Image (cartoon, rainbow, N blue to C red; front, side):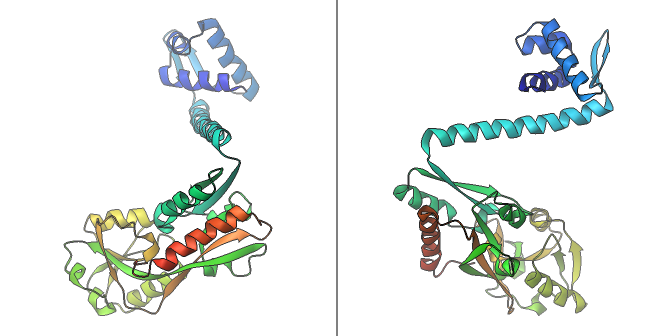
Length: 295
C-alpha cells in the first residue's frame, strides 16, 4: 500500500466518481482506477462497488477509508513536525499533560528556555487519559502527574511542582460566586456534577457530600462535559485548581476541605541531559515565585 493509493482511495470516497477523482488527483482515469484496484487486491476485500453511475463504498470500505483518513492525517502531522524539527533544532524534550492549563506556566517556561537553549525544542503533548502509560513507554520525556500516581513506579524521578487545592466551579452569576470560601453546607440542596475520572482526593470529597443525602448529583463523563453542564445551568462541580484556565468564564471559589493534590513532574532516571535539568529548573522557579497564584 502506497501513500498515493491511500490518497486516491480517500479522494474516491469523497467524490464517488472515478473521472472526477482522477481529475482532482491530476492523473488519468485508467491510472486512478488501476491503483484503486491494486489496493483492493492487496487488502483482500472490495472498498467500492462499481456501477454505471460511479462508485459507492461497501460497509467494509467505509470503515477502512475512515481508518485511512486518520492514518493520513497522522502521517501528514509527523512529516510537518519532522520538517520543523530538522530545520531548526538539534534535540527535543516532550512534556505530556492531561490538559493545556495543567502546567499553567508552560508557555512562559518555553519562552525562557529557548532564550538559553535555542537549538532544543520543547514539545507539549496532550493526553487526557493514559499519559503516564505513554510516558513509561518512553514516548515522552516529562509527564505531569499527581504524586499518588507515581508511588512504586520504577525507573522514574519525581520533581515536586506545586500543591493544588479543590475549588467550586459555578456560573459567574450564581449566588455562590459571591463567596470567598465555600463550605459543605453551602452546597446543600444543589446538584453536583461528579465522575469524569476524578482523582481519589476529589472522589473522597464528592462521596462525603453524596452520602450526606443533602445534595443531588449528576454523573458527567469528563471535565469538558462537566463544564458544559455547568454552563448550561445543570449544576455545579468541584475540581482541582490545576484545571483552571483562568479565562474568567466561570467562578472558581476555594472549597474548605483538607484534601489537596501534590502535582509533580516525572522524568526518566536514565535521562541526564543538561537541557532537561535546565527546563525543569525554569518551571520550578516560575511556580516558586508565583506566591499569590491560585492553584
